[in-house]
Image 1 (cartoon, rainbow, N blue to C red):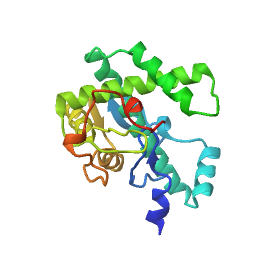
Image 2: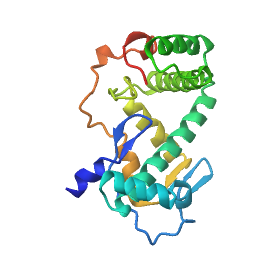
Image 3: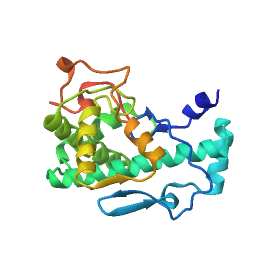
Length: 216
């Protein structure tokens, strides 16, 4: 029962996947370095919620504060590592925002969203989605591998992500010092997904928002 409850609060928001973190015990010091990415040290303080947020998470998901803390830290660490590595990868590959794709996304999103969000918000989202798609496309073209469907990424090149993160690890640019958080991070990129896309149906010729009805 506890494991089922824990799964309710472990979904990584950047792609909608489940992560099962190991429990991070309360006696760990906030200044403890849990990971190093591109010479940047990440401490427990960087990935921990304030007391109010923690209490709300635990209460809202009917789990203990310890369980809520573990899932929050796992999500935050994974997000920080992914953001940092992909930004560095994009720079190395000379990937920049494509204005035409941004305009296409804005047009597609505006036509499908009845809430009428602010133009600035739409453009910010568009730039983020375009950059992510361009990075995913480059990773898949470089590494190939398994591609899966997720709620936030209709084409998620999960194996290409794993290969690239392993490369950073092997080059000493990514080190996760905490064993539990390390296991949780790599679990994100395991291949045991229910929605694996057949290779013949994988195409990065056009962005997914131009070929599907799915919107973020």
